[in-house]
Image 1 (cartoon, one colour):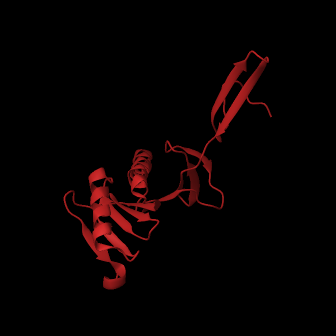
Image 2 (cartoon, helix red, strand yellow):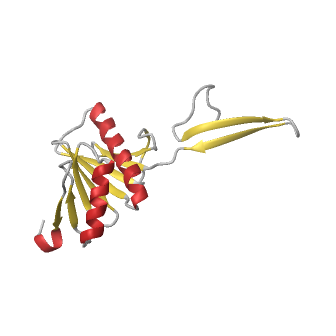
Image 3 (cartoon, one colour):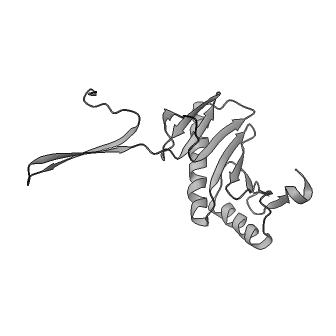
Amino acid sequence: AALPLGTTPLLVSEVRITRLFVPAQVRITVFEQQPVATLYLNGRRYLLNRDGQIFAPAGRLDYGTRITTSGFQPSVAELKQNIGKTLEASRILYPRKLKIKQANFDASGCITLKLNNGLDLICLDRLTEKKAGMAVLAINRFGSTGKTVIDLTCEDKIVLRDRVKHGS
C-alpha cells in the first residue's frame, strides 16, 4: 500500500533514493529498524532501537536487553533516562566481552545489570567506564561462580558477594 508523502512506517529507519544515469534508473533502499532491547512497561512489551526509541510492540520474543522497573512507575523523563543508561552501559561493557541480559531500575535509583555470564552488577545512577573497569578487574582477579553480585554503588570501591557461597 502506498504511504502519504513524508511519512514512514514505524519499522523503517531510513529510506535512500539514488538516481543512476547509466543505465537510467532509480534505486530505492529501505533500512529496517533493528531492535536492540525490549522494554517492559505496564504489563506490555515494546521494542527499542539503538537510539532508545520505542518503534513497535514486542511479539513473543525478547530482543537484546530486557529493561524493567520495580517498585515504581517511571515518568516519561525517567523512562528515557533509564533506557539511555542501559544502552550506555551496553556500549561500555561490549568491548569487555560482557553483555547485559536484563537491566532493572528500582525506586531508589539503583540499577541491577544481569549479565550473560550470570553476574549481577549493581550501581547507582549509571555505569561508568571506571566502574566497569573495576568490575572486570575483580572478575579476572577473584573469578566468578556465575552467581556473583558486584556492587558498584560507591565510586572508588566495589563489594563482591557470591550467592552460592554466602546465600542471597
